[in-house]
Image (tube, rainbow, N blue to C red; front, side, top):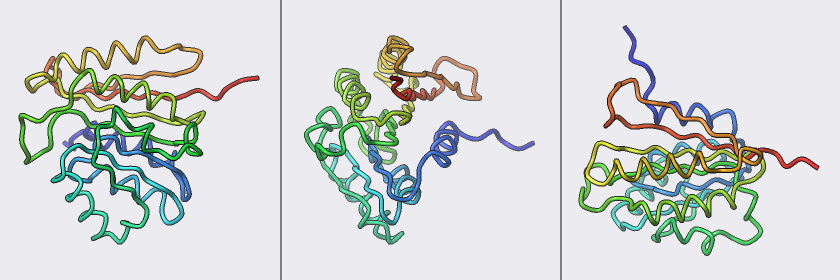
Length: 195
């Protein structure tokens, strides 16, 4: 029996057909660079990818992964909190971002005491909602199973479902593991503005 795709694979599949050469995207939690590499491949060679992480080890890992794939030229690596994204995104790109990915929690194989914090995550999500282009997609992968993760996942869910339904479509995809501590994926699409 084949295993169902992971939530991260599902997020990638959703964005695969959405992103094209020349688009602008953001990896709000660069981590080990897996999402950055995925996004860079979709928008290369003419696109632009902004990658954020507070940890130098994450920025270095992302640099190395992109460099090895000959995609380093597509990305701007920014060692800063995603809560300050707006300050680092060129003003002419505000409202033009086709996709933004958040993969919350801690850096895999890194310091598990350094985790995304609900307050800064929610600030970042508010910024992300503003930065998205009409029809742009925001993916948020939350992990309730680690210390602090449950509170963050609850607050992210509340944020998603308090969005104005005229402006945003929201969908939640639960893990194949049917337990409260299982990861969950939130998909938010900014709806095209109508005249």
